[in-house]
Image (cartoon, rainbow, N blue to C red; front, side, top):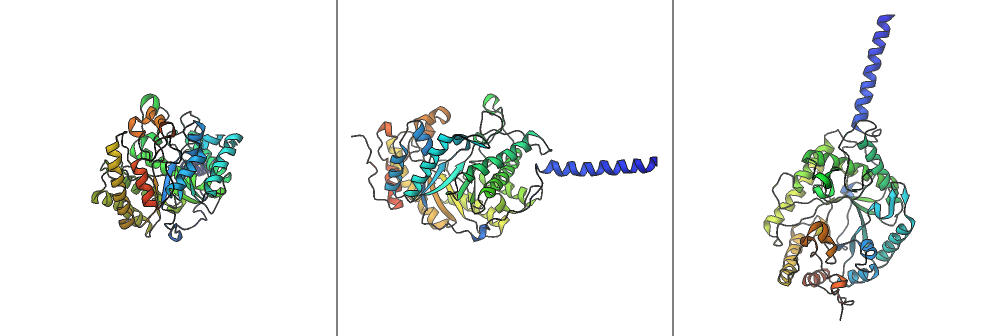
Length: 402
């Protein structure tokens, strides 16, 4: 009897150990592939190719620009798509609770943009992780009940409720510049400068893409998910977009994540092909093609791509702005001729924004196609060039100061 009990105890311990291993791999029972649209059948077309990045909600809230005037400028420029900042904490206080007034305002903005015939791609790169820093996460720990696994379930639920509140939006970008420390980091990033290693960052990104996608598709099975745009296309450092994307795919296909189907993480690929300078030539083209080859290598078929940010900063120098207008035309020509997989181009950004200096310095102030309203509200040279490329015919200076 003693021997039988001992054997039974050993078997029970082994069973518990197996359960523990399973739980350490995923925060919830693995669901397998999602029942969503296969990316090989998605065709976005190019009718909405020319777009813009803009946080209409923030510009209105902080007095930068009235959102209805911004919509009129976007229309005048001939743009057909907007990558709209809809950060969860703009309109939610936690994963399950909305701020009613803020939600109503965001709904009005979305309705007015769509009424103007402009496609909305919702983008959220904030989350609720128990910290005031909405881009910080716990360290990756897949043990059952860990702070990290709880965070992933909270992230899933946040996306579920966010997308459920906006059934009119059918394309969502999950995160932003995952391989940029500013947009994904540990809790003490701002106080101590701590960062995740390459492996830590890409593993967390893979988790968050899956759980973000799962939340989105629980709310709207027909929605399309976009990889939060990666950066460092032209650079050769190890953390560049190509290497980062390749490691995401290796994670997905390796069998240690909830699904081995890349579409369950993102149905549309995305990166931000900023160059080290504004001049974009054959080397820049080759860098983008090499990233796309990673997609073809792991997926075995073409996948639609969005450039959800691209732009130049002129640091307020008129001669640089004039040069950028020509650089823009050359870059767009390369994209249309040599990168047919790119279906949307969202220029960053609509306005110069002096509030950006507090976190990004002068570089982040002067990306605008337009001067911000309080500084004159007029079109810069690259704004005129973008209008020409997009086929717009409206008056970009309709609200310019006399």
